[in-house]
Length: 378
Image (cartoon, rainbow, N blue to C red; front, side):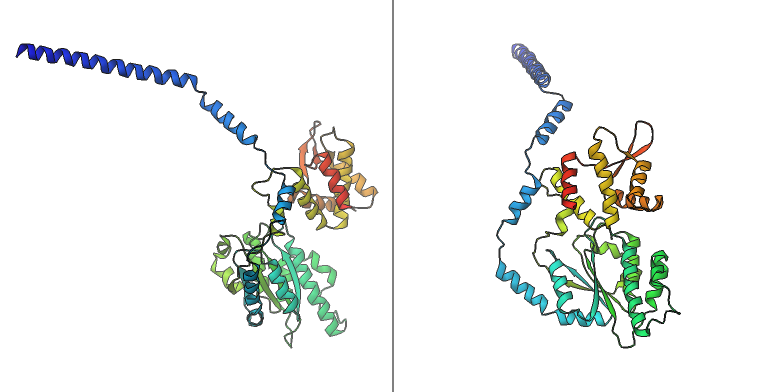
């Protein structure tokens, strides 16, 4: 028994020694391997370097390639579009009954809605709002509607303006006052209707609560009707407040067109494209073309100064004001500030801190892109 027990003890000692050696060897090899590996910071840097080195295609080239892709299922899409056009009379009936039309579904609905307006809303004055733009002056839209009704009122009353505000006063009135004026516009024969055609009422410039509230109040005016489209998956959350949703009185229509978002997508960079300046220049051009000629000229003054003084940090506000006054582009600093606000809202101009401590104005484009922008703007 003893030898057997002793043998067992020896075997146990031997086994334990081998396990310890194996564990020690494993630990030693593990830490040696870890020493040879780069640190986590180096790993991240190396990974970031690889991502940055990806050779993405230029956006202009990518868009040109996308344009060359032949359309598919044309006959099915045409049949689908015809089925929507057959509903035009129903849509018109619902508009006249006081409902607002809201179109949703995959694909751009811009051409469909504009076709509906041009072929069916012939008795309406149609005002188009491109909600996909980065910025929209909603008050100017409301002023335009008021001016349309004012002109119609003058024609009916043969310029008897004693009981109506002057046309030029709408711009100085508050939005609430203008909407109150519109609420009092009632036609005896049901004519003189205005239709707001809003592409992407869920767009970045219209999705805030205040804009939605003003649009909802506009839709409640007796002679104003609304036809709109949405594309964002969370668009219904815009009207989570019961009051706003009730004011719009939406009649929802599922109208997937499967059409590409060619116009709406201009302001959104393609995922597979490089961040070159070509797209930025194109976007800036679209924005500038939507501004007044005076605003464009003010931008040109700043751009020309920046090109002529590339080593400077920017242009002082006082210098820009002096040059614009000399060219009769602005009459006061208030006017210039309003133009600069437009530029800053669209990211056309940035504020920099000059070495002398003062703020200066800078256009965030390289010289080549800026020169190309001025050429295309001309």
